[in-house]
Length: 230
Image (cartoon, rainbow, N blue to C red; front, side, top):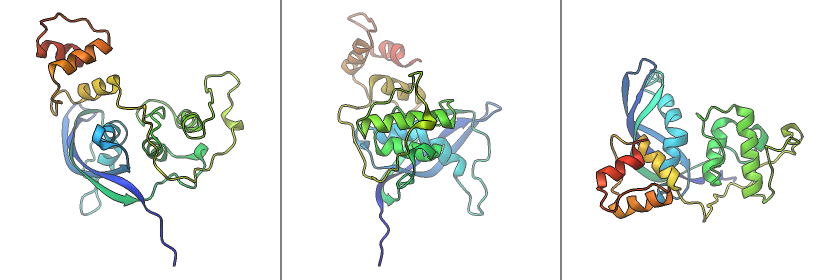
């Protein structure tokens, strides 16, 4: 009897709102989606949900009769809330496939599972071929330990050998935490709600690392505004 391999995943329940093409704000709730297991204790999973997956999940949410729950077009994100996170099991969609032919969604799962943040997000504005080239370079360098320079004038994606991804294990880059830029970006994206409880010392440390000048007697609200007003 053959058993199907199952991989560890995180299942998120999210709510929030977005603007449609007419700049109307649309609320959504109880939207559920899954991403490969990653370090959610440090907020990495939530970062990927907000950056790579939320829009697809909202678009795919269905009513009981199978109709789209949120048919309005998505123009811009307003707020994303993380309402629940559970560990579940699922199957990684990229295992056994050629990296050069992965879909955009499969590359997003690869980015999380292998901690490859160089792989562009779906709304980065890059086309599928360019995203595949960057995914190929990221996987080669971080997983296979072979660096490929996609900016080299001799770089030729068509001549690159196929890479069949046989390993479904997750990878965590110990040196790669959420960066200050990523933290500031996430805070700007959720400026209306869900503010982190930063201390004044933490704000000063962020400002120092960004080379942002501030007076010794700076007030919390003023420094917060400088860092996160975007």
